[in-house]
Length: 77
Image (cartoon, rainbow, N blue to C red):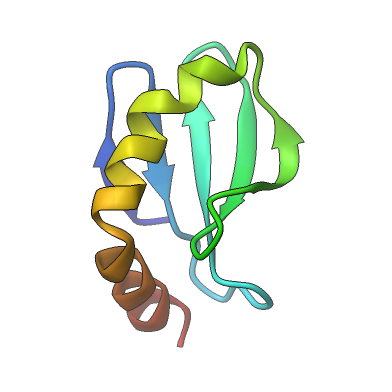
């Protein structure tokens, strides 16, 4: 599972052989995990509490959305 970016309390990954809606996974050091749609940046699966701990990763994802779509295509083909 390629790590695309590391943050202070989480990492953002895209798994190979994924299907469906383009998305990434956030895994936090406290064990919280979720899948996030690249286009809408909404949580598809999982839960993160408190939600504000996603702020660093979501800010980066907004600024790098085109890169995330490109990585999705590269990794999941």
